[in-house]
Amino acid sequence: MKLLLIDDNELDRQAIVRTFRKAEWNIQITQASSANNGLEEFESDDFDAVLLDYRLPDMDGLDTLRMLVRNPNHHAAIIILTGAMEDDLLEQQCIEAGAQDVLFKSEISHKHLTRAIVHARTRHLLERELHESHQRLRTLAENDSLTGLANRYYFDESLRTAIPRANRLNDQLALLFLDLDNFKIINDSMGHDAGDQLLKEVARRLLHVVRNGDIVCRLGGDEFAILAHNFESQDPIIQLAERILEDLRRPIVIKNTEQFISASIGVATYPDAGNNAGDMLKAADLAMYRAKRDGKNNYHFFSSALQAQVQERIRLEKELRSLIPTDHFLVYYQPIIDAKTLEITGAESLIRWDHPTRGILPPGEFIALAEEIGLIVEIDSRSRLKVCQQLAKWRNQKLVSPNFTIRINVCAQMLTDEELFNAIKADLDKTELPGSCIGLEITESVLIENFTIAAELLRKIQDHGLEISVDDFGTGYSSMAYLKALPARTLKIDRTFVQGVPENSDDSRILRAMIVFGKSLNLKIVVEGVETKEQAKFCRDCGADFLQGYLFSKPIAHDHFEQLLASHKADAWKTLLSMDSGIIPS
Image (cartoon, rainbow, N blue to C red; front, side):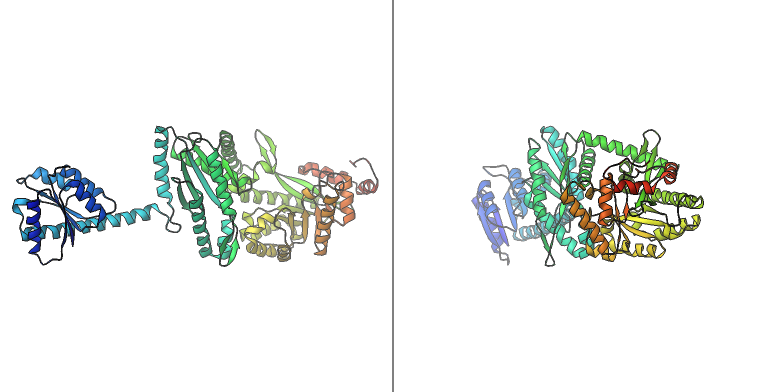
């Protein structure tokens, strides 16, 4: 045992040393004659116990005791020695200050002293174990077990205390919310072990780029947060966000394979984005989702304009939820023209919102929101039944031929639901329609996340007679592998590839190549966005099977579509497209 004896009285020190020599213990005693000398010895070595005289010439005994107890690097049981008579108040003060025991010099004996040290040392070890256990529990409570970063609890506490501090010091505070882009694809395709490795590497990179004093937290899943202090303008926060994005762009090697990850970052600053933790959190979260909607792999600052957009979104969501039961959704139809005969052979159905105050709203105003809040399935299901009922009516009235097909767009959520097939079959049975008169249009971006499940479901639907089309071809994840695995019979080439045709030679070559490519796979080709007769003629000459666009008609309500069916003159269109110029047939 190593013992530090601090006492300015040499006779008292020697008496204590002689007392310990009578013991059979192996005790090493270091002596100090003043408080300062004792503190220096305590700092330079690691002692098991300290005997501290209460009265020292250079420092009050209680002050010395407190300094010994507060030393972060050394721990020892401390016993106070006093030459005074028994004093209950003195004992209480010393114990409260951290001493393990108080001994009166007049009572010191070999047996008394050794017993006091043993008891003090035992109590101190128990207290130390309890303290270390508390620290471990605190670490578990405040740190993320996977990455070692601070966790959500620590983050919430840090933000809650940082805001009043920033207010007192007239300081700025920035909260950065990070959500990894496409993490689910890596996690699902390579396994959770690979996902965990990726999260650890992201945590390491975040710690590498932040400034000293910034707090980095993992909130859960693939969400992280950074709390940044002490900056005078937005520039350092912009630089921090850009450093994060740049660092995350570097490939991450997992299982000997390079993986690429990016992040969407939302930034909220105090006091601009809010004056309490709740408002700051909401602001950063909203800004992060805006960054995702803007294309991911970027950052976005919260602003009053964004707040106004959010309020509008909340209002629109409330209206959507309230109006779905009353069915304020209409189906419009845009004709699909046979490129050879120029007859109307089908139509694409498109949903419109009949808003009580704003009139007819196009899909861009509400479809994304409906998908996000889980209402799109209900809207699509109601609209699909309307389409089937309308087509059955037209077939009964002989307005369309038995081969007339209406194509319906399918949302991502429905392509993972096994009940989609049963729901479609129920609609067809209810309206007594064959499956061959209905087609489903699926965008490439919808297919990519759950390709295997979606492809299997689509095969089942196709076996019932429905035609499957890949919509917006060329704008998503086009590949031979996807087209080979999908049960698709039709490709719809997106309007963006038509706009420069035929004036732009590069655009013309690309469109021609896409049509030839699709035809080589034995697929029917629908070209969307045809707005001029020159574009229509070019597509026909390249071998397109069907044409769709404003040249023939914009999407229109069912009654106007009936008028279009009656007035459409295929021969007049043939004449027009064979001429250098002409008037659009009415």
